[in-house]
Image: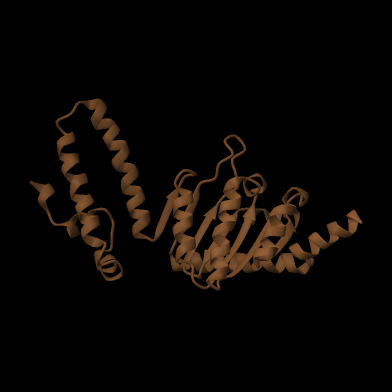
Length: 238
């Protein structure tokens, strides 16, 4: 049967560059092959099922094929339920620098999830990782506790009004060590969720790094730093 073909043939059918996969992840290749063979075997058995099951299987395999082609190109997309684990993996692999832009996340930063996320940043600090985050926001007041903790951790923290940033750059960005990028577009107001994407594609990593530098220049041009914002608040209170 066709399902007994070798793993490399199935990887090629799924869109993988087998040579690059073998070179970069030689130890992982047997596991990938095992799963591909299981999928192929199950697909053969589904042919004996009714039209309802076959139709649903077609939907699942079409989506899987898209995900595999993206992964072969170095890109992974995920929803809110999957993102925390992938984000933790990305942070754990970060060794030198983390640069980020946060947009439309005020409520999340003030939640327990935001606190736990900053706990991971303390681990990065202890490993000597350089960290910078730009907050693109409308109202700084709700975020003061988060900004204060950023500063306390040692994260270079920039706050800038979104009106000063081009609309096409209103999105989340995280750049890990200049070799992995996470992006997420603005929240859909109807469901309050973001779909995130991680990519290792060198061209996209370079383009995102350039975008970050542009936002940084816009921000510094108006003297926007969290320390300044916090000090201004203290003076106002006095």
